[in-house]
Image (cartoon, rainbow, N blue to C red; front, side, top):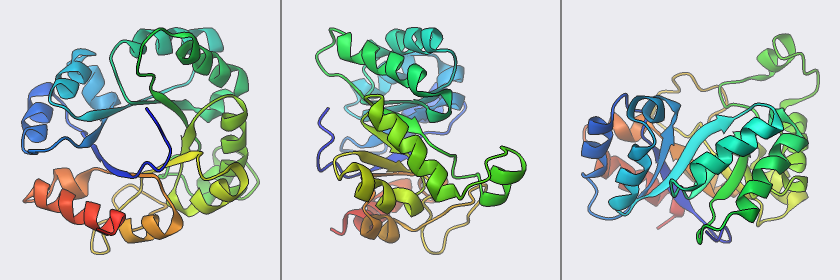
Length: 237
C-alpha cells in the first residue's frame, strides 16, 4: 500500500458483532476505508477482516499491539495473512518492539504489505492525565513528537495522533510520514469521551492524511449521507 498522498475518511466499525458490521458496510455502494478495532475483532474473530475485504473495503486493523518484542512480532506475523491495509501498535512499547513488528512485515512474502503505524497518545488523554497518571511531566505535543520520532526510526510508516500534533510531526519527520487522526467531530457534534478534538475541516487544513470517525457516522440517522458530508469537509471536494 502506497502511503504517499493518501487522504481518506476511515469509518470506525465499533460494533459488538459481525452481523451488525456487515449490514452497516453493505449500505455503501462504493468501497470505503473502515477500522476494525478490539471490540469487533474480539467478538467476531479474524474472519471479520476477510468478510469486509471481500466487499471491497480497505481495513485498518486497530489492535494496538503492546508487549515484549517477541510477542508483538508473533502477533504481527499472525495478522499479516488477514489482508489488512493498515496495522498498528503502541509506541509506548519502545523501539525494540516496534522494530520487531516492522521486520516481520518487511520480511514477509505477502504481495501487498500493510502500513504499520504507532499509537502515540490516545486522544482521550489530556495534559492533566499525562502528568498525574502517566507521570510524563513534559507537554503533550513534545511527548507525541518524541514517540513519532521513535516510530520512524524503528521503520514504521506513520503514527496515530491527534490532529493537533500533526503539523509538528510533518515538519519534523516529513510529509510522507503518515498521520492517522481520531478525535474528529463535526462542528455540531458531541465530543463524547474524546479530549483532543478537531473538525474534519480543521484536520484537512492541518494536514492529516487519514481521519478516523465513528459515532458521528455509525450513529447517524443516515450514515451514508453523514459519511459523504464528512468526506466532503475533509477532502474539500
